[in-house]
Image 1 (tube, rainbow, N blue to C red):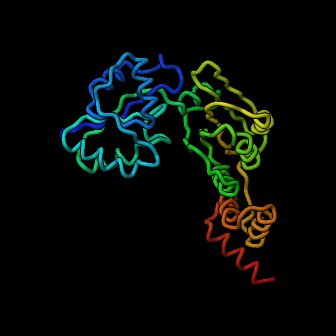
Image 2 (cartoon, rainbow, N blue to C red):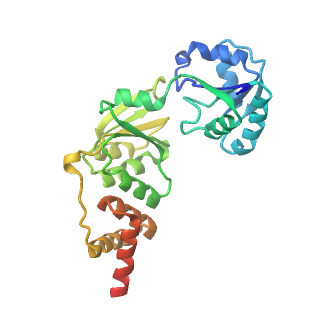
Image 3 (cartoon, rainbow, N blue to C red):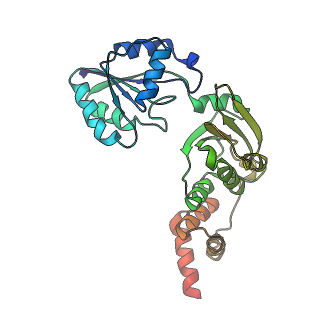
Length: 284
């Protein structure tokens, strides 16, 4: 095992008072600090009263691939590298996964400073079941791809957690209401732990109407899982599968996304739906 050490440090998602005590020590002891936003890092260090003596480098989506190799070189040289992102735990919908994987492959020890998490915080305050859940991060931005992904999740019985940008929230909630049903329960958690924290709990349809007026801030959406007793069953008849794909295409959905959505609804492989569509075309 290499003597270097990679430390993943959780940072506050809003209230700086939530910073774990160990974070200040790691900031002071690091040889190199890789930060998603170096300016935010310096503000955080100042708030914690920690003078930064480490070499500070940026580590974000655009330079992650190149910078990973540089940081692994520092680690294999025996240095202590601290990775922080703008909020929450590194690698959870944030930069970090590539560096963790590369460090492990290089024989470097990896540890973490546990800290605040928007995923767990939103789950805790949502009022929805939390004994089983799955984190989906950000949905695809394109409407067709988003609809296909939601169709795949429509029968998921576990509570679902998503991140979303405020300007896309209304469209996403409307798409969820379409895919999961308008009466599915959900919670929109906005600005968690910050001054204007807000948690809205309602049906997807009602939340979509609320969000249509515009929403600001960091958003986490928690959606109840599917009721196993009410799981939808789509007939497996090839003609019916092809008809449902055709309906989606007429509504403007790309064929590939429509096939994926119908396959998810029917509980069959995408190839089965694709073959049904081809067969239907040959019959015309």
